[in-house]
Length: 58
Image (cartoon, rainbow, N blue to C red; front, side, top):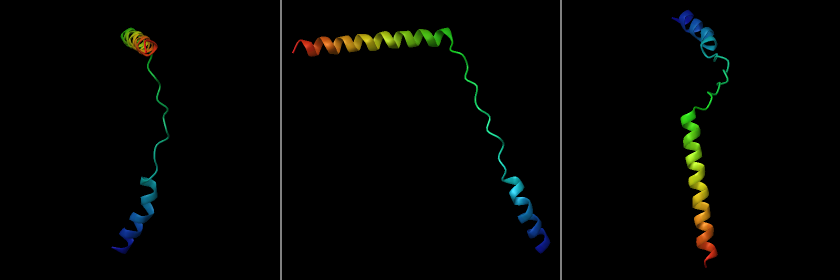
């Protein structure tokens, strides 16, 4: 029993080693994603123009 415990304690550090970090490779942007980004950018610009118009009327 004691030798089994000693063996377990000796093998424990070998199980704790983690794998090397693999840096994720980003995927290229699709045409659909670029379209949605364009739509969101135009919506943001329209919202900013609307806020400017509302504030300047005051």
